[in-house]
Image (cartoon, rainbow, N blue to C red; front, side):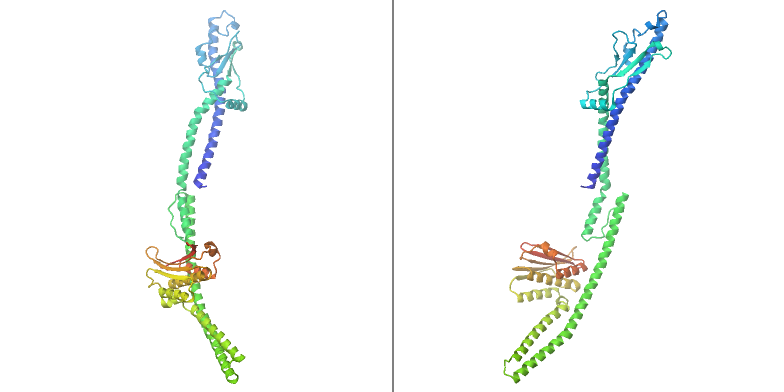
Length: 456
């Protein structure tokens, strides 16, 4: 999952938790606000009745104080206006058949769901009754008793939640949207870093990265840049070492060729001379066709075959034909030599582009690649047709492409995994020049392609 989506998902979870916490807080606050409204209603009504009590006491002084209350006109519209919605107030001691005076409770809110009412009452409990004396100086003046209507209190809490939840939901959505945009903008340079890493995986180690404002991403970018520089330096050092190794290998091959020529060549020549002498001597002393003469003749034949094989080995160990004949002529000679040995499969040579000025290490590497790929195609496949294509690509690519295709079937993945010493040596040569080797499936067989940069 993408990092931006993960952060946005976590942000949405946090917003949802905050929204839930805000809803719970709004529910508790709305429910407790009813208690505050009950206390305030009792306080306001008690103050109003205290003034009414002292007025009645002064105007009707000839009456007993017990007969002053409840005052005949305390249940008025002005008194109702002092009572909060959903709150009921009753005078104590209450008169006969006297009912509590309640504030307006109709239209104060929508009817809440049953689960909400049951949950709130179970968790927060019932509302407390509030009592206030009418006068602190006259205990006989009576008290005001206020209590909340449970249904009205639940409706008020539900309406309060609905009023606040809309605003909270809009704010949560706005925060989530703006934060998501901010996260996406902050993490946008991560795409450039990932692209740089992919280019580094393809061999472009020194890949410039854009400047990043985020400190963490900037540190990652600098680390990627430093890693690319170290990889490029290591690749350059490896190329130098590989080239040196190839030079040492070439020197060893020449030294081995000299040793084989000087030691084995002379000894084989001596053996051949001795065998000829024995054959001639045996023919003079005995009748022709004796066993000694036949044995000497067989030794002579075996020695000539060994000398021929040694001569071929010496030719391969010395400088390849590409250095002496040029790339194009050496490739033509290579194909002709294979054609002269076998009539099947048919080998085609396709040369594209100007190959005249290609020489040195590039020419030798191209010749070795073609030689190894042709040898593998002839020995390890049942191909009927093999195509050797040499293409010089100009322009920005500026490389030499060597491709060998056959129609002998085969599994490209298995061939790539089980590459022997020949393909391993070819890969090392190509790596030293900054080239590459690929083994892929062709239309009816395998395709082995090597790319050699001419700038090398």
